[in-house]
Length: 72
Image 1 (cartoon, rainbow, N blue to C red):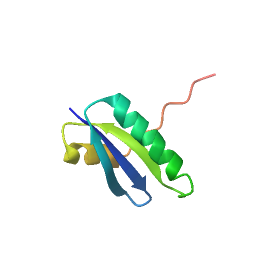
Image 2: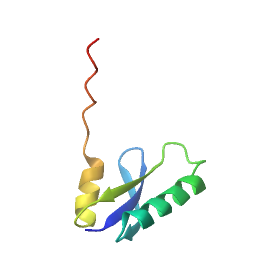
Image 3: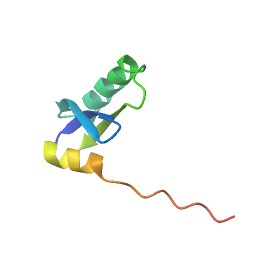
């Protein structure tokens, strides 16, 4: 399965930036994109491991629950 790199903007706007066969390449590309886009407020560059582009976008758009708070 490939690694997809996306720019994620507010209101679930996704921009596919690339597709890579290895995590190392996807990670290096994502780091370079983050540095280049450092001035864009609200934009995240994310790496997603998925079977295809549709699955990657579905995973990016899912709302995740917050981690439980520790009981002290």
